[in-house]
Image 1 (cartoon, rainbow, N blue to C red):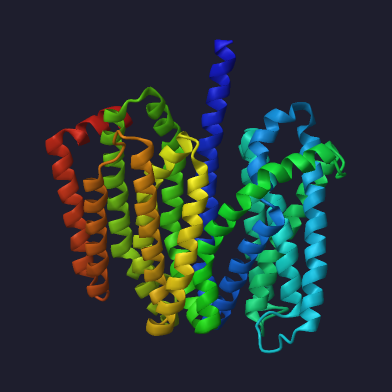
Image 2: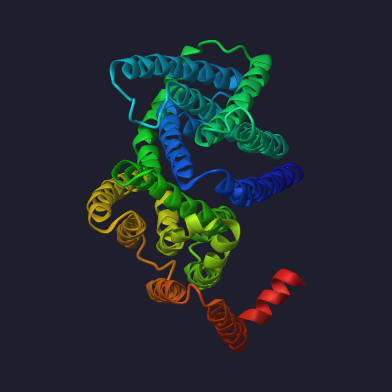
Length: 476
């Protein structure tokens, strides 16, 4: 029995590690294509594409009905009928998506969209891709829970490859005069092809037919998750949509580029979170708060360092990877990077809330901050321009941190992270952001600041013995 448990544990860790590595590589492909697409697309085209992706992200959640959140539990509750369960929810999503496609096309014929960037083709691609994304999301959860990390990675790589390859082909040939539509079509084609393949694979295991118990179960577990999923999506997407609506496509494109660049730091943060969470829960269960606070403080310093370096090299990344038309995105990149750090700051408190099974508060807090973000965006964009949306995001993330920290203190009287460390590192990141803005065109000064921060951390770590312990435990 011990041997079996050990193997299961190993497979779970292995799947988690490969999933994280694969996720970073997959996210890295679109990042590496930025130099190509910022030269193929005008800022207007790039803005239209980013707005489309924002709408697709939101619509795929609506069509998905929160069902992806039920997969992990359904694996154990349905056991022998799990494939039948998955096939049934796929059939349910196809019905919901088909109804949505019919409804949206009906509305589109009744309202004059002649002055809007969304054509009939783009509208239909939006809905169909949203259906495909919902299907892919559920299958991804299935692969993770079953430990099929290789299949998950292969499908993700194929989808990303088709997206990029088809987009480039269409930009150069069939839709060279309308490159925003070419990019949108290429992205949609990859996702749709993968969804069709997933449906084919799943139908071979269990027919795509209605299973009443499965649908009831999926909706009962999934629907309560919708408000939270919507809030999270709107919190991250509403700024691009509002900039496009209030200012213009070009500004949405410039802002969207800054968002795409900061995705690199977001992926690093998510990967750290995925690796850290099991260990965090383990120590919480043991009530080893001294170890928790010590290790968490080190983790916050580590991510502060990554954030500071990322801030200081950000202008060079944007200058190298894009045309001069996009360089104003640097001014949005700085506050958006600080927003990612603020996001990292509250994962400690959210971890406690999940451990204590007080997840209802997470949904309420996210909904409150999403509403606040929309209000901030509206007034700040109107008064200060599109760059202000990045600062609105910072304010919203700070509000999220404050609310989650207060809740964490009420749930757990013991400390799991030092507030002094959190606020101190935030101050350093903000100062670094200010230095980046001040010395955008002074590469040498920015790199000297990186050297100074690195040297300071090494000296402090060496004096406290942290560096020696890290080398012994991690490298030897």
